[in-house]
Length: 192
Image 1: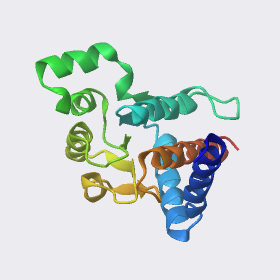
Image 2: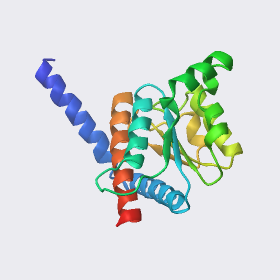
Image 3: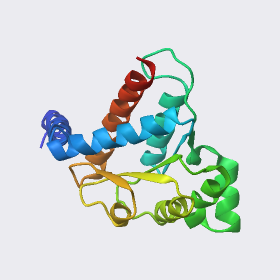
């Protein structure tokens, strides 16, 4: 396959995955996710997000959209990406093991009524699973973002958005669209 054909194929694969997001079940999940986040913010709570690798970047992106702004100039919304603090991540990894990199931070920052968003393209990352179990103990509402299979996190999350693809890159592309949809609707519903 030549380069131009490969480029077109990858673009079409991405478009196809996003078109599947238009399915009513997908739309209902997205609507539920947005409403839970809006309710938390209206009740003076925060969002706490985490992920590994590319999903760590998505967690940072999500948090930034909440704290800074998406499209509207408005007051900041409290949001924290657990993968942003290198000192905490490396200290926890060194002292307790990387599997506790996010759960240890949740113990410090999460409060009942907060929303914990775990992003994992596989749904099986041990540090994500540990964080979800910790959030449950803390009575924090959990939202997962993963692939079409869902992995272990699908059975743990209060709401689990499963992107309509098994391919990691397409899953991440759906996640970033989901993050932008959430940011748009949070601003509309809270600051209209």
